[in-house]
Length: 244
Image 1: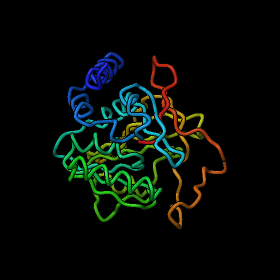
Image 2: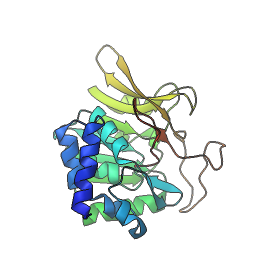
Image 3: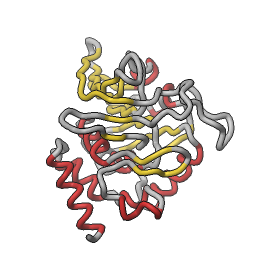
Image 4: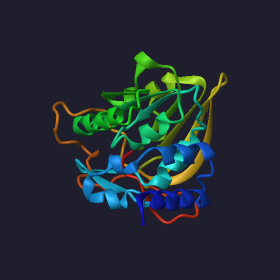
């Protein structure tokens, strides 16, 4: 089966399983997922599965990317902040739908590789930086949308909420521990914050620090060998989501 045929098959699978936004499906059609995985895995790029990308990380399962992107309710007038660049695939999909994407990554090697992919794909509306995602990007705030791909405790980081525009949406995993998390959609209003629980998930913690040196060991919140994040939408078997 050709790469184009595998991509069509994947998009049909996503549509059947809840990714019903034409804009989201079109964005995922336009972004070549094989660019974001090592050559060894090119033949699996359009399987609905997470794949290793090196540095102990993986590219997210396409269904997870589709569902979380859909939850943001994007349009081409919006400025988006993504916490956790990973391979860059999620940011690339966002860039096809939003006016501007700002993305933060705590692993320098992953960030450098992602930036190279953005340049190769001429995705000039993405700006990336190495920083502490919990602190957001105050210089570029406010953001109409914020997407977080790591567990954020019971409540979102205050700095991120401060940087979310009134009327904006944040999609983030929240809960008391990594085994009791849900993807939550937060809407910031003049009166406060509206909270909508979407799907049960398992995520590694949103860590508050960045490595001091490139290639430095990364803490997993005291859980060495912890499995990367997993998203479990309703009516699906376990969906492995490890990094964007």
